Length: 285
View (cartoon, rainbow, N blue to C red):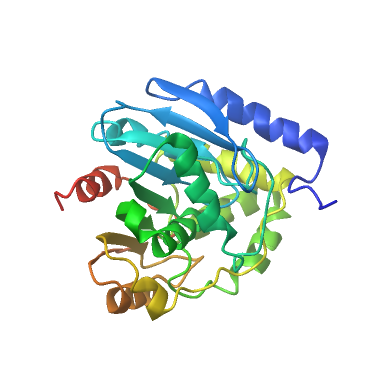
């Protein structure tokens, strides 16, 4: 039997209880349910008008769909929104973690779309969720309308120094937490109390959760050439997790309709881009 992605039963309960409390504050009317897939049950938060086009939201690693609480109201102005808890992460989806090279994540998202009755979708992916969006869109491009990627994996190398720094900071109490948050924020202190609270929640997840350690495969030119839809790529120039400059360069060279956005002074934690992303996804930018 494979090892749980949570460090303990008690830690799992603490994370999921806190997540359930957050979901009760979801800012728009919603339905919450799970659907069966090839990688087990997958948790979905559905918001917005059923007659609008579909948008799938895919959060990053060591997180869950609480990531989208600040932007989901904006996205529901134009879309029927489905926030998906990634399998193998600290949410309500199953703990499945096949190899990144298996092809299973594209099949998983295909199953999610099939279960939701969606023939065509737009995708918004953050970090690991961005990699999964690319995996799906390059495998099933005929099912994807537009793709927005915020500091996605799979376009450039991961920073080798991040993991040892994260381990060191995790052992240093409040000082270490503050340093970790600054590192993710491009070396700058967090200005918003709301964002600080969100980062505190993420840091608490680290205490009870086993993050993935495998490196994300980079999509080569042949795979990225399959993207026949408009693709937005957003990176900060101080990203401590991924090489943003190399990622944007690779995307621009290999994606036919690439809309690259470089944000000066920003790290892996990218804020206040919801309206820009929504306008791109509806074809206004």
